[in-house]
Length: 77
Image (tube, rainbow, N blue to C red; front, side):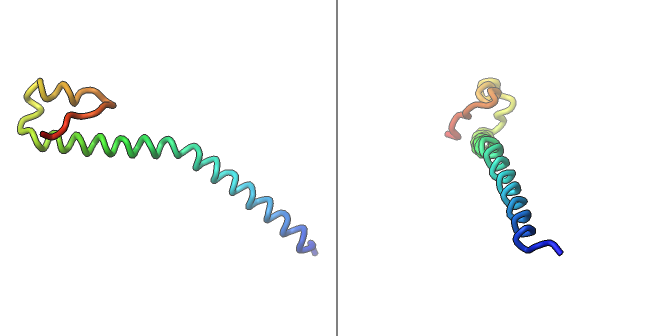
């Protein structure tokens, strides 16, 4: 029979390893999450811009500002 303290120590080490892996994952994903949030904002701005201008896609002066990706879109006014 294996002593409880020995088994608990192994479980503790496994939990530490899992915790370290989760922290490394969180660190790696943080900039991806920030970029995704920025893309969502850009997409929302684009939708607002396109919705505010009928036939925006056939007017080159309105298409040009939207052709720069990533970038900021003009306001919907």
